[in-house]
Image 1 (tube, rainbow, N blue to C red):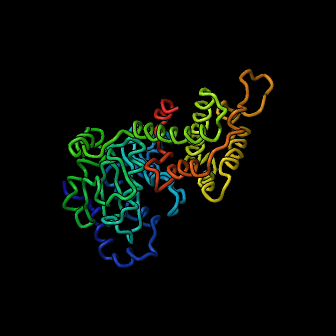
Image 2: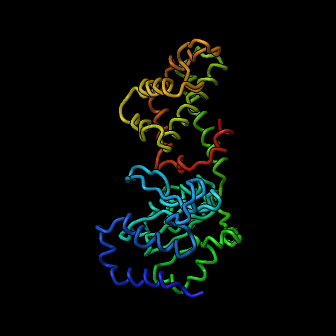
Image 3: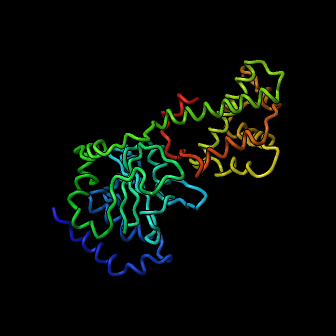
Length: 335
């Protein structure tokens, strides 16, 4: 199959204007609208929702939230079949060097790994990189780590058949995408996000348990276990809420600045009690509520370093997890 005229036009336009397109003035939104959107439209995806589907059934979900160097939100594109996620696409402006820059690759791989997707795509149209997102991402990985395909815009016309056979909507429906993903699976370094997150939570529990036991010697074993579990669960819950836009992003990270971390953390917990009225945050006796309020954790003594070490590992770039896309079925077993 030869490349369609629209793709040939896109390639020629990019080639003829490459200097201005690679200047810092040409931004991500522009490259998405002028090149990446029509590129995936040519691959048979209803990028512009011409079919008028409801949100739950759109082929492509666009994310236009603001991103900074210190925060991440959602992937730029989520490609779906019948509402089920198949792969993410993360877009960058053409002035970014996707072949060698470790940060865009790490960002994309965190998205894909957290969402339990096999393959995801990083592109600025000039470059097109496909990653195996079953490999656990680490912040210092090379940009080439877990990369299974790398093309430039000059390859699109000659490689169009290959692109269609893997990444078109038809290829997804026929199972070709899944076959390609399985044939390119990198065994080394793979880890299930469920197991990895559970293991890390166990480490946090151990760290916290040792410190609480040291600073609160009068606690019984039952009270110690209760304190550790409640504190960890509350922190994880609030961190997930941050990435999903329910809580202000970075409120826990702000605790890394300054002292008296637990005192300030308790203030956040108290506000959460007022906001969510759930068993996770229950500090005051309430009428018509049989379960007693938590009178143990409010009087704990916890060292700043212990809490800072845990909280720091919940944020980019220390954290390999992107909580905005973490499947809900992971969270139940963890709690």
